[in-house]
Length: 443
Image 1 (tube, rainbow, N blue to C red):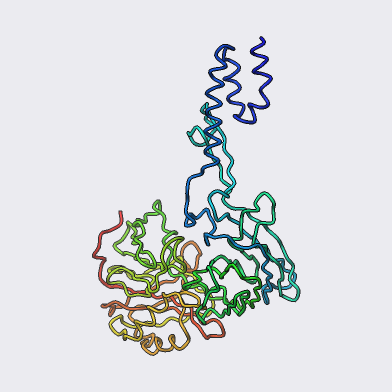
Image 2 (cartoon, helix red, strand yellow):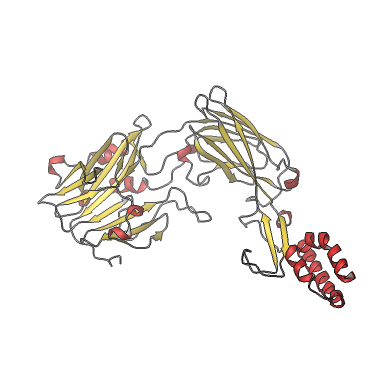
């Protein structure tokens, strides 16, 4: 009983160190054997201590660490954002802090000698890492101008070794805008972004949808000496034009799709319905490169695909073709002409619509470029495929194309909607092939 009492008296200390699972085991150990068990436990505790003192070496390229990979001096960035909100809108700001060294990552270690059906992982020592810490604030702009400050070092004492990694601003007018592209020194940015940078200040006017190009890649810049940001937001509403959606094609509805084939700057998927020979080949051009992927200056779709075309349909049989997932926002114009009629200038315009240009929205072209393409269009009554909006059996509006007798060669159909006071056009390109698909069919 004395041995049992001695073990039991240790319960608060042991529970803190090793957890309650171990206590159940210790209470069943005879007193004479306890000294040997205690030696083993002391050794394990020493091992845990050594692991905490000598962490694994990790480079700053580890995504859990600060992207700059170096220390940032303490300080504050003052933000003044004009035209950032509408009346009575609250703007949310989320600041994310990360350590720049592995040894500064806050870790919580636990020792598990006994397995449990409710415990994740099978290791003896489990480590939980606080790889980042978020600080949120909310401001109510005055006359559409939002003012706030963000500390370069985490303001909470427990995370004092963490430094600013990114800032996300959320609002009805600006949508979601991120400051998170870190530079080791003041960046020299292409003029198209509309930004000016000095050692301590970032200024200018931005279009939030035009940040995808290199070197920003979708995120506004930060650098160690930055202390003041004064920007004017000029968001524009680019009309959405969607002709087809591969994700809407369900296997149980008879659709068969290939696994997306990735290529520099995008991916391709092939689809067909088991009820007919028509094959759809969709090409997605990425607005931003995937995390960690290199920036692609000019997308390179598969061989034989006209750059800039987002959908091809190999339509060898059937009188009509329905597009149930079509979305046509704003006033959409459609022009068409044979693919063989494409000029080098027209090919360049289509390819340019897929590139990420500083300050401009992806999948768009200038009004002058749209006029150059429109000059190639044939009169609507000479197009061998008629296009109209219809209501299908389910009562849904769909775009329907109807084949004519003289549809004997590939035709290019361009859908454009003017925006930004008609200075630019949102663009989608479709190619209809009268011949059957010659590649493998998706199963």
